[in-house]
Length: 361
Image 1 (cartoon, one colour):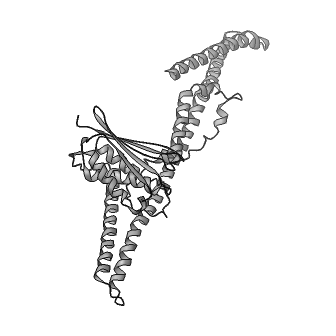
Image 2 (tube, rainbow, N blue to C red):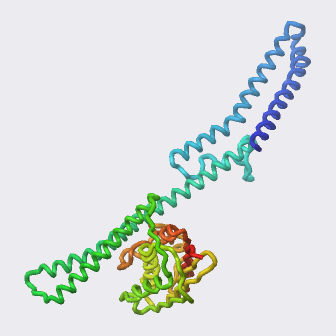
Image 3 (cartoon, helix red, strand yellow):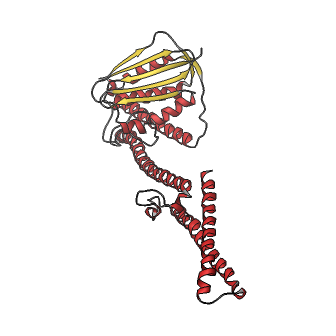
């Protein structure tokens, strides 16, 4: 290792300096200073031991400072990291010369210092990302609370109307109220199931997949029919492009929820009419399902965070009647089918989502 080689080099250099100091000090003392004061003879040979001892002690102290002072500073930096302070290392500028290079004694531990700097940067980045995730998680919880509160408000409102003794509702009106209550109750049930799925994926629990072999073209056509009947989708145009039936093994319940979420995302995030084209292509060992729209697209930040489970690309004030899965849960559902999902988007130009699933061939 470089640090081991440099340590040996610096140690040998220190020993050489010690020898040179002795070689320079002893002759000068014994042949110059002592005779000058008349201190000659065999009785003053002890001076040699004193000189060797003093030079050795000075050298040992210098060695300790040279090799130890960087370690003391490094230990203070480690303590700084341990205390959760990820700012620039204290007194780091004192380790460098004016031209920005490490001083000689710090150059000995260059790799250690560089690794500590990288660790500090990574810990600081992790701290920022953790804070962003926590903030996004709070926003996500607020959004989910809003999503749950919306249908609950409808249920309570219709129930209050039905129980109001001041009004006599016709049988048809009562039936309409009950249908709306049932619809909103189903929506709440879906949201609760989505939360359960999210928690199970968060805890890395296995989600049971009950696959059946079906024609994914006809399956997707049925999902598109349901989505297109939604009042919010009336202004949008849906197209399905597939040449022939394609047999794929998948869980119809989970895949339906995933596709519904992707289609409804394209609907609710585009107020102006857009064309949503779904293409199904069979390849050698896989089936590729592509959902493309020409809507407003997503910003770079949204694309970067689209698979973050706690990231909401819309405000919490926006009415949401979807399943509440989010693209992150869709990704988990697709991967549970041994598939992959990719999102590409350009702001103001549209979004393309590509899902790849194993085929029967």
